[in-house]
Structures are given as C-alpha cells and as structure tokens.
Image (cartoon, rainbow, N blue to C red):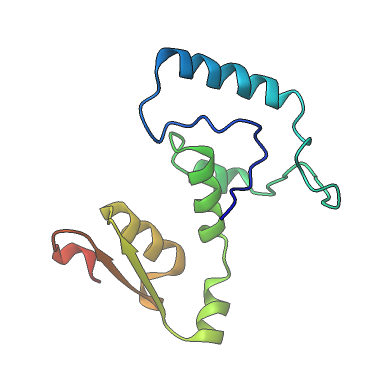
Length: 130
C-alpha cells in the first residue's frame, strides 16, 4: 500500500534518529511548512478551525493537556448525551490501556446513571468497572 503524505520527506522517529537526522527533520519540516498546501488536493476547501466554546468549558479542561487531547475532551464533553441515550439506549464505554481518570471523566460527561464503563489492561482492577 502506498503511503500518502503531505510531507516531501519520510524522516520520522519510529526508530532512534541520529543527530544529523534530527537536524534534517527540523530543516525539512521548516521548509515544508513554507509551502503548506503543495501536496493537498486542490478540490479541498481549507478553512481555519474555530472552536466555539464558553470560558467555563475552556477552564474545565486540563490546562496541561496537549491540543489534541483538549479537542478530544471538548468533543466528548459537548455531545448531547441525553439525546444519545434516548435514541440508542444505555451508553457503554470500553477502553483499552486504562487510565483511572478516563472512567471518572467519561461517566461525568455523560452522567453516570446513563453509562457503563469497562476498562481493560494487562492486569485487572475492580475500579475499572462501574
């Protein structure tokens, strides 16, 4: 299968990089960022992302989280959980590679009475099932 990428190089950190490879990576990424739409399908419409959230929603996020984690949390947090339950019934979550905080966060967002959570990992813990 052919890899599709908007980058014109294939340097990545899947394997340890030498100092030269690290410098090359930074230089090539800087160069590639100067022409961000070169390898993008011209039929696509590209717009700046705008996230319409309240100050309270923003403050409720973990401020040390990465941007992608914050966007993910906002997505889950703002879903219409009561409408989802009405349409689909009870909500069940399954996570692999469990982090204890995930259970509390997910069930808080969708209201614990509407949800069942099961976390799995290489070892069992009763705190993962509610």
